[in-house]
Image (tube, rainbow, N blue to C red):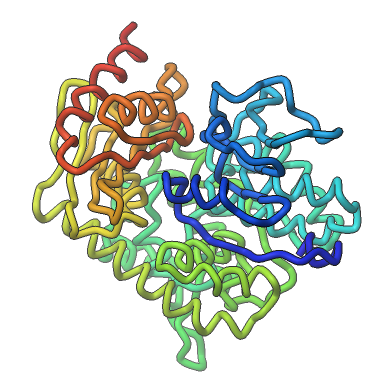
Length: 427
């Protein structure tokens, strides 16, 4: 949209990750400039052409010249990344946010695009650390609020407050887990019956969380809070929620988490173009996105069940892992890893690593709890170093990272990861 408003001709290309093929494509591109969004920082030294612009939030390539960090007259390439300014790319601003900040610098009128950067931040779980958006994300949120596109409220932060029936909303609220509620249908039914909460409206439609009376929502939220045993979980359960005012309630786009999930499902099921159409305001694209969202829900549920029912989780001394082979799509194995880590079956005191077969080798996804990263764990560096040791490529964030490694190197890779985790956490 920024380029359209500038009257520039361009083509868009969607890539899941930076691979050797992608690097060759970028270096050999015939266009004057290549603008790479949410990717690229970890590979800056590999780009050998002029006119590369990267707006990203992943840990930068240390081999790239660190001094060139401003837009004034770059000769060959430029990256805009929070890490270069002493900021975190995990919770202070995401790739969408960095892209928006550049768009706003190009033309202040582009503040009407701020809401997309807020959705990007929510999709990257950047509001999870403090149950609210902070730092640069807060500035961007302010732009979106001033433009009238986002409203900020306070409430229960589970996913699906506008699209899930209230029973499923409570039952499948994954984090934090509430004893007697999470994954407990009978417990949820008992709670709703206790307070005479109606599951359906007079017209027969199933009530969602936002359909309930505010007083009923408050009573249920208080009940959930009373069942939590520590302050960290209480802070995670209740916090800020962000509403996209451009779209109607129950549309799937009115709640920022649901909007982000729709885009996520499009990207993970090879239909990024539909996600692009939605971001551009094409509401007709929602029909196509609903198919992706439905497939995403079913796939995640089936994948999580596959890991649990087949007892795939294994442990080394400092890391736990599972190998999904071809049974879980490489585009969702990271989500499944995070859900397994928080399912109660895994040890949150250890990072988790997941493998899935990909077209170009083996996809690796790693996740860790905030308590581990606060102790000094950096999965981005671990994935990068461990992948390099077996001839692969890796990177990401301290709390969530990934890699692609050659098939057959999983055991050697895990041994290196185990050593690196021990070195970071045990000294």
